[in-house]
Length: 349
Image (tube, rainbow, N blue to C red; front, side, top):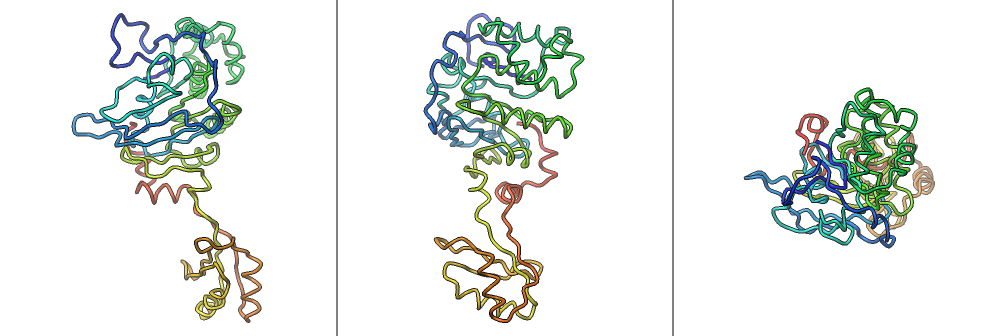
C-alpha cells in the first residue's frame, strides 16, 4: 500500500469517501509558517499500538527536530511503519499521544504541511508520471505548476510523459517522492525509500534525500539499513520490538574514539602499568592481543603521539597503533539483538 499525503483517509474518518489513498487538505496554508530551528516538530509520548495480543508499538517516546534528517532505524517488523501511520493519522494509537507540527496527527492543520511516502508507491499504471501527479495535485488543491518542479527535483522530467508501468523500480520510488513533495512540505516522511533498489538506485536515492533535507525542511526517514542511516542522518532513533532503545546523533551513538595498541605479548602488563600513569586514560587487554586505550569519564581526548612516546620511552616496541570507533552497525546489533538474518527475514511493520 502507498500513502501520499495529503494523507490517506484515517481509519476513524466519517462521511463520503474520496479516491482511495487520498484525503485533501487545502493548499492555501502550505508552508505559511516554519518551525523555529531546533524545535521538536514531531513528539510522541508513550505512543502505543496493539493488534489483539500483539504490541506493534510499545510506549514510544520520539522527538524529531526542525530542519534535520532523522533516521528511524530498526529491524523489519520493529514497528517503524506502524509508527509512521500513526503520525499521519492513518491509524489511531491504542494509547499515548503524538504532536506533529503543532497539531494532532491526521488533522488538516498537520496534513497541509506533511508529505509522505509510506510503503511502496502505487499509481495508475496506464497514466504517465505527470498525469498521475496531476490527479494527486487536484485532490490536494496544489497548483499544477508545482509538478514540473518536483519532477525535476527527483530527476524524472525527461520521463514525465511515459506510462508509470514502464518505469523501473527506482523511477517508481522517485515518483513517489515527487508526489510527497507536491505541497512543498515542512515535514517529509519516507518509509524505506530504497527498498528493493539496486546499489546504483540506492546511492541516487540517498543523494536525493540528503538534498531534500536542506534548509528548513525536516525529513523523517525509516530504514533497516545501517549504512544508509549513517550516511544521511543528522540524528537517529533505534527501535526494536516497538520500543525506542536509543536516540541521538550518529557520533553520540557510536561513542568516543579509542586506540588499539600492539606490543609484545609478554609486555602487555608492563604497557598497562605505564599508561596508568597518564591522567584520564585507562588501558585494558583487548581482543587479538591488542591493548585498548580509551578516555576515562571526564578525561582528555586520547592522544596517539603521547601514548606512543610513553611506551617507546619506557623501552617497549610498539608494533601497531590505530584508532578505532564502534560502528553504527555494532551499536545497532548490541541494542536490538538483531542479526543480518533478522534484518532480511522479518515481516515489514
